[in-house]
Amino acid sequence: MRVFVTGGSGWIGSALIPELVAAGHHVLALARSDASAEAVTELGAHALRGDLTDTTIVSSGAADTDGVIHLAYRHDLGQAAGAEADAAAINAFIDTLAGTDKPLVVTGATLRRRGRVATERDELVPEGPIAARIVNLRTAHAAAQRGIRTSLVMIPRSVHGEGERHGFIPQLIDRARDKRVSGYTGDGANRWPAVHVKDAATLYRLALERAPAGSIQYAVGDQGVAVREIAAAIGRHLDIPARSLPPTDFVPPLSMVLGADMPASSTITQQSLGWTPTHPGLIDDIESGHYFT
Image 1 (tube, rainbow, N blue to C red):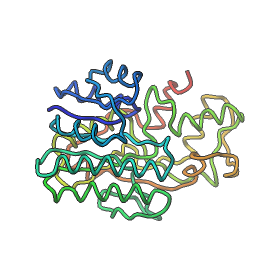
Image 2: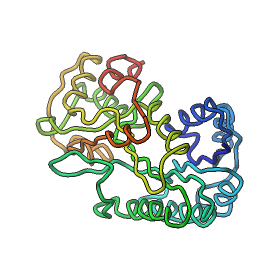
Image 3: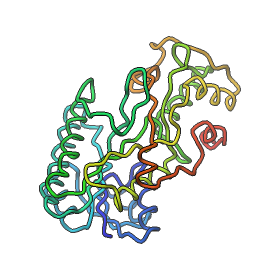
């Protein structure tokens, strides 16, 4: 299959392109800069120079391929403009692919459900600071009614692995090194779902190849890891204490999620697509030491 990928030079994309190529797919990757074009080429893709905000380029990438995996998001534009750019890209994909039965895989985040574990069956309700992004996911999900094999892959707060530099785990480590204490908030019993980046890449490939139209997949390896356990693992490697700190000791975006309890399950995903996470869980990955070199 010839696959158009946005965000191919990003953290997940850098694992996804080799996963697709190894499975025999041919990848066309959107590249906003010379550096991104070079990166995706080295990973085994062909680069399509352009920006996510250029819907003409986005549409051409979708039209010239057999399926689309949409990873990119313009965080640099700010919350409102980023959501608008994402909406324009998703609508461009839908208009181009309507009636073709081609796969369109769109990225979201696992949901938070107070007092229980979130699952693939939870309704996408636009609320809170990410309401606009949920609206975009609903648009993509509904496109199954227009003759597109749309599916959503919902990723957890921690997508970890060797080479991660900008996620929440590196942020916690940097803060711990700077302050000489590995911190969490409250009693630290709140849980984060997590997945190894290579397991996430495998799920994206499976969604492309076989996910039913209108389905939702949860890319979750660890259902819920207590944040105090994460802090303790970091503290052990840095030989510093792990303890509770005031929320004001942390800055956004870390401060916005550090105290949140948001466990999520991937049982339905694993059963429906035959996806089985095989790489280290979050604590084992931290304990392996690569985050500290």
